[in-house]
Length: 447
Image (cartoon, one colour):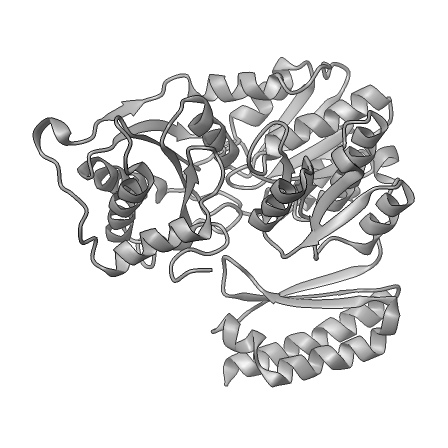
């Protein structure tokens, strides 16, 4: 990670850390770096529903147009929709204003290259260098050289048409609860499912600028679970604020996270001989049950660090077409260049329809091993992560588990958190091990 860019763009408390001044500078620097040598450069900008989006969008647009670059404005749209439109509209770059699953006070800015992929580290470093050098060397065109802003009126329609083109079945006969997290999918997700024939019960689809992710969405699947059971639905799906991830719930109320979804999709693709190299890419956070289920089916699992950018890098390197994270970021390289929650929902429901099996039956192909994950808010995540006392606590826990489980402790890439995870056969034991490590982390943070 760089000085400003984390694993998923630049994030912080809006108007405090991520200020309009910072957004303006980032717009100028990004426009300059990403459009050098282009005859008629244009950058797409989209956002989620949080209240600070308008403020940051205005500042970004001012920065970009002041560098002589046009802006294509798509409004509220899922992050993967902006990645898709960046490619299809042949834009020079794309920008998303979103903090994904974070609370409303946070926001973020993330760039896509003209290919629709996230920026490589060296490009982010070039932008950071300009920020540190007070934007020296960036021209200020005048008159007709200043950039224009052009709304893309049919952006949502184009994205929905693309999503529909990825499947070959209709969803008639299915009752689906959709939790939109009061975020970027509030319109797209219910609309496309209804167009495909499903009976849709949409919840948390009334964004007001401040209710994004509030007690709902993929980080709070209990909300959609309750509605699935109340309405006797076939399944529920929950997105996060920018709709690049998906968590599902079966008709019995069981949570079907990204690991289960990847197993379901990988086994389905392999059966259809559409899983190149019989390979799936997952992160070190994926449950051991995923590895067992896929190994038994002859599917190889390649592991990466946590972060969908690392999953994508490994997929591009190895030729894999399916990869993702337990959190619900699933990447289908055959269709899009980044995790796409709505696309994932369509692919998952397609398997249900094609197989004639319920989501519960499909999820039963994987047996989840007990896993405990606790997020610890700390003052300095790097100092805590590298402290010898934390290393000693981890080693002590590993001695208890032996070869029957594992411990993973890592800093969050987007927040000031340390994530402590343990996996093994005895959940009560796992809780104790994790709690011991958490208490050490808190003690270090308080010093």
